[in-house]
Image 1 (cartoon, rainbow, N blue to C red):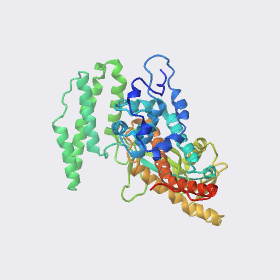
Image 2: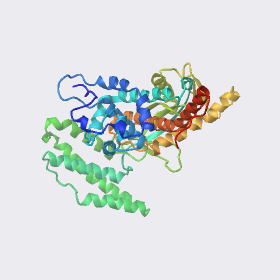
Image 3: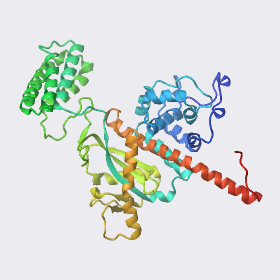
Image 4: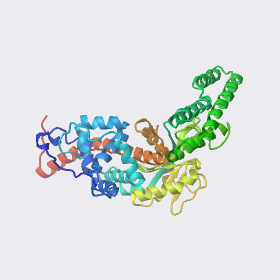
Amino acid sequence: MGPRKSGPQTGDLFRHPLVEMINLKHPLVRLADVMDWELIENAFGAHFPSTTGRPALSPRLVAGLLYLQHAYDCSDEEIVNTWMENPYVQYFTGETYFQTEAPMDSSSLTRWRKRIGEEGVESMLIVTIDAAQKIGAVKSSSFDRLIVDTTVMPKAIAHPTDSRLLERSRQNLVKLADEHGIELRQNYNREAPRMALKVGRYTHAQQFKRMNRELRTLKTRVGRVYRNVRKNIDVIPEAHWAKANDLLFRVNRILTQQRKDKNKLYALHAPEVECISKGKARTPYEFGVKVTVATTLKEGLVVGMRSMPGNPWDGHTLAETVEQASILMDKMAKTVIVDRGYQGVVVDCVQILRSGQRRGVTRGLKAMIKRRSAIEPTIGHMKTDGRLDRNPLKGALGDALHDVLCGAGHNIRLLMKRLRLLWPEIMDWLIAEWARNMGGPLLLPA
């Protein structure tokens, strides 16, 4: 059934109106009044074809929780609990009266993300861009010049080691055998964990011969369990064959992959994870997915974010990034500033400026190129203040949703900061207008 209609419900007359409890000058209140919630309701409402059953949650409620979750770096449980305690959050999500019970179970946010998909989260990013224009945080001319860069969005996995991957594979095979009554010759529940522990200790002591010996023995034990389960796969009901074959395929990849192989499996539950090297001394390798980021040159407003599976070269992602940003801004960018990693890339109808470029560079273009590094703190804030540093969502779809939501959360933080700074300007303007029209100063109460 369609989303629940907003408005007073039975019993609301005995609750406290939020407008009597909050400061209407608060940035979150003023931001809620300028955002185009109707666009979100239209975008989310397309996912409710049925007209029967229990009404769904309000799209504004879900969108507001997702906005603030990524603006304040909260988990699903934390943002729902904050909603019950904070009247400003309730006002932002469209409530009229103060509520004392949770609006949903935190697991509902997981289903909502899958339901709205990439189109839904991109519409949320569009709303933040429109709100930035309404409050004057960004001008329409700012969309002509963009900064584009790439970063790595790490996945929520443990650091991959061969011993841990082998032990996790054995545990999952033994669990699969127990669930479907497969009789194993040996499950190595006592021996294998000790071997994995020894591998770590020998590695720490730099006794690599002993480490390799224990690792080979552990791989042999896991291989025996793997072949025993594969031989008796007919015992498993047909409805569970897909899940069992998927597990066997991943375990086989772990057993056969070598140290310097490409496209290695780094997490048993997340086969989409890639090993990406970004040339950092503190983190030579990061395990996740590459993400492209597009921001305005002057204000640093995020106007495009997209995950790029397969770890492509940065230059191959530029055309797709510019296309996405142009769609979200509803305007084609004229100039894009990038770093040296995009050497030799050409995009139709777009001027590409690179760091270190000297030929044909005027004084104005040189100033634009020097500002390219302004995107680095934007990415840093999304990782430290937002949720870009660790993606807990599952699969390639989770990667595609999480990065766009991180961009929307960064824009929310940027707009709230702008509104905090804008209020003194508005008061100065009101005082000046009063003095000009009334012929005397405006006396405000102390």
